[in-house]
Length: 262
Ligand SMILES: [Zn+2]
Image 1 (spheres, helix red, strand yellow):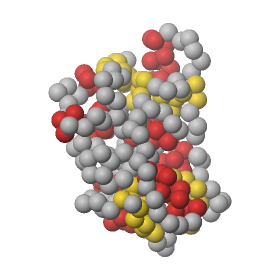
Image 2 (cartoon, protein in one colour):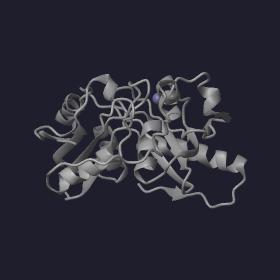
Image 3 (cartoon, helix red, strand yellow):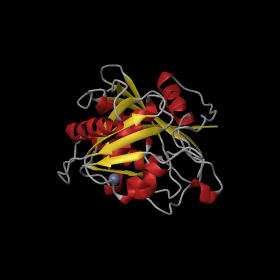
Image 4 (cartoon, protein in one colour):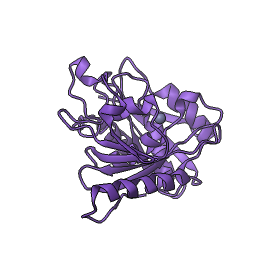
């Protein structure tokens, strides 16, 4: 689903209310067969003012850490569509600690913490995550949505090159394990996903998860995956095992093709 705009000018109070309604509607995008707990999130992109939606997704049979939260799903959509930051957002349930940490790293250096609306309550991210640990504690600028792409090269066909481009646009300042995935669907469409890292490592969003979220938002959840290519930079941290585990569940019989880029 492409982002869409709330027509300006809309008073801030009404905008928060509209965004809250959209986050509720976004629960329809959730796919939580394990917990049965649907969460929706709506993000206004800082660059265009467009709105991006996402729902939580769980993968039965996979390690529980493969789960994607609604905030991450909406983030993946906004980032993929060229947003460079979050202007404000709403979630249908209070963001968990994992998501507060993940969202903190979207803030560009010196960016003002955006507002997060849950129900009738609106707080800034700084209020939701006081005394945050982040890239600045590691001597890095941060800003997962606004970091410049890295230049990567590798040989391969159009699917490999799509994955390479996604890997170049990924965010991995802490491990330098830049990674992207490209999926070829049965209708010949290609969807890509980028890795989004976090200073605390574990709240990161893996490239296959990003690609699956974007496939679902494009209305193609039922379209089979025919090929999957992971392009990654060789680093201390490897993406392949995690992607292989999930791919075996969402696309049984499809072998993950892994290409290392320089
Ligand atoms: Zn969460």
